[in-house]
Image (cartoon, rainbow, N blue to C red; front, top):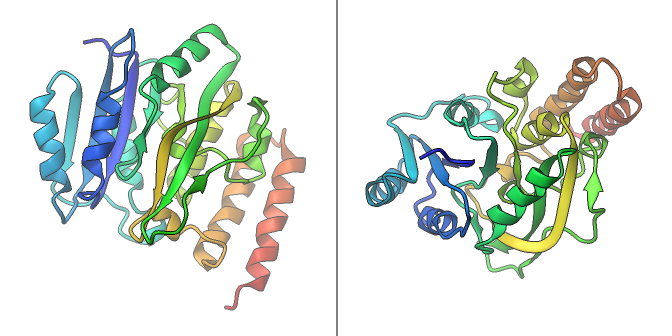
Length: 271
């Protein structure tokens, strides 16, 4: 098989969710080949067993990398899972990559087809994303991730650090075959960094159609990435300073405003 899309799925202790994730990806209806590239980061529950069972059933469509121990980094916790994601990107050689973490899932079986057609026909678009439903483990009412957004956007909106691109909604051009810059390896969380690197090559395209579900639960990494965490806020200040230099200070006005925003947050956090 020569897939046009690699679906990158990092998992860690997702036994309660991962079967639905995998099934929703396999249910995609396309006129091109795609495969699932799943990396389990040393889960201590039954995630690896579940992933292996699907890999056994669908050997042509699933590549499973079941790491016996967590790839780290172990500390700080805010960087957890980064090495697994970097490993998975090394396995992706298709022209396009879609992301769907092991606790999220897709609801539109034509999602990939729509996004690939868009990027095939619009060479100036580097990343496609769509709206998703947010569901809560604690039973809180679900809601849409985004309100109204422009159909097209640029990297500068990402530099403002407004969280508007749901990870499980993205498909982007594979510009990662030569690896990642050092600042990406140091940043807390990695999704934003992936989107920034993709958007350095073209525009963002947004569809308001709901194509998936983003789950919020106690084990989710997003719980660690909050403005209440001193490490996270300090890490964001460092990140945006490094990004300014990485992009040769072309976006300094936007990036330095974001730095100032996080410096203000830092001043409000008790030592």
